[in-house]
Each structure stands twice: as structure tokens, then as C-alpha cells.
Length: 286
Image (cartoon, rainbow, N blue to C red; front, side, top):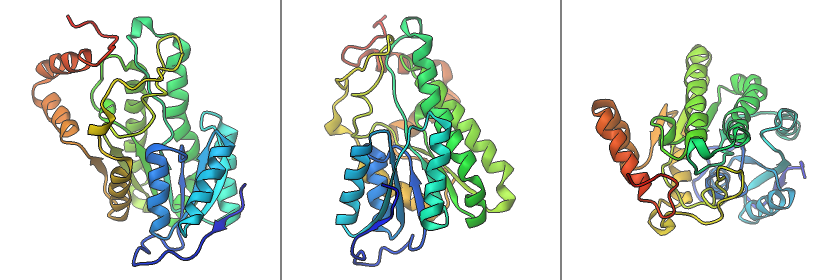
């Protein structure tokens, strides 16, 4: 599964990432898979990563059938040796790493008092430690290529969201880690992008954990009104090309950040009402 597969050369002028290697964690669905398609269409060799080997293989086949270059590696980002092996296999196959997209993540939906400690730990293991492990092992190659580290964060990493204590905590931690990394290596050519897509059409909400650790299965939101994952991916590829620092894609997200800066108390109340209005919300209306 770790051998690079190549389809026909992609047609058109999309050659921004020719000769580049892009590792994308959690790239068998949602934003991760859309990013894999977008980077492959731009000429890059994409390293597809996921816990399900069958879905990894299927994603690689889809990319190569579209003319892209891809390599698949089964990896659970919460397991540090898996992350080390992921980077090693990418280097063995291509000799370089130019972009690392830390996308693998999971969500939750429960009040803190109703949430088991093991659920909070699982959120941190995947959303925070997974990014730390992958970045740690890819860093030497990224410094050599003067490459990019991307963290898929959320407005929940800038403002605590009720009913999402573990998720918000993991995204706050991720943003602190990436901001510090940016400063530490600012003189060595490392680019760090923190991307906050907002609510996107994906199955992350269906896999969100309840307080007891079981899977939510049903999304509480109208997926049809959300930004498509493919649109998010195009923005991320362009932000990497331009070496941007931050990317907040939705008007709602930008409004939350603005209001929290200038009207924090009102912002708290607004968010409470908004999240309590979700179907089946764990937050009481009053």
C-alpha cells in the first residue's frame, strides 16, 4: 500500500505543486479527501492517510484514476509510532515532504458534566497529539524543503463552544502549538497555516462522540446549507500557495471572532442561545 501510484499526467495549467509531496492526515473523507483531490490536481504527490486500510486504498485508486499521483499509508494519528512510520514511508517513496496537512480530527457533543474523562482524552489524542506527532517527525524534511505545516482548526479553537469542551480544548491547544511553531522557525523558512473552515459538509458530525463515548450518528445541522468540502479544499490549497498565516472561511466564523474581541459577554450569551437551539442540543434552552 505504500508504493506511489501514478495516473496519467493531469491536463491543464494546474502544476503549482509539481514535484512536491503532500501528507494529509484523515484524508479518506470530508475535507481531508477534498484536499487530497485538490493537491493532486495541482500536480503534487499526495500521501493518503487513514485508520481504515480499505478506505485508504479506495482513495488512492480514485486519485490515480483522475490522473493524480498518490501513495496510501494506514495510520492512526493518535499512535505516535504510526505517525513516525507515515513520514518515513513518504520519504522512502518520494524523498521529500513539502506540505503536512494536519486534518485528522473528531468532534463531540455533550455537556462537560455529562462527559467521561476518556472521551476528552480521545479528543486530545486525535486532534492535538496527532498533529504534534506528525509535525515532530516531518519537521526535519519540512525545514529542508522550506515547506508548510497546515492545521485544520475551527472557530472552536478561538472561542469556546458550549457542548464542545473537549473539541474546543483540543483546537485551542492546536492553535497554540502552531502559533509557537511559526515563531520558533520563522527564520528557517517554515510556513505555518491555521485554517478554520467553519461548518462544512462532511461526516465529522455523524461521528461526533456523546458524553458516554458512543457515536452521535445523526447530524444536528442542515448539511445542505454548509460550505462544500471541495470549496474548503480549494481555499486551503490557495492559502498554502500564498503562504498565508490564517484562514477563516465563513462570515459566521469571522463574526464570532470579532464579537468576542469587542463584546465578550454578549458573545457568550449569543453562542449559548445559538448552540442550545440545535435539534437535540445537550444544552438547556435556559
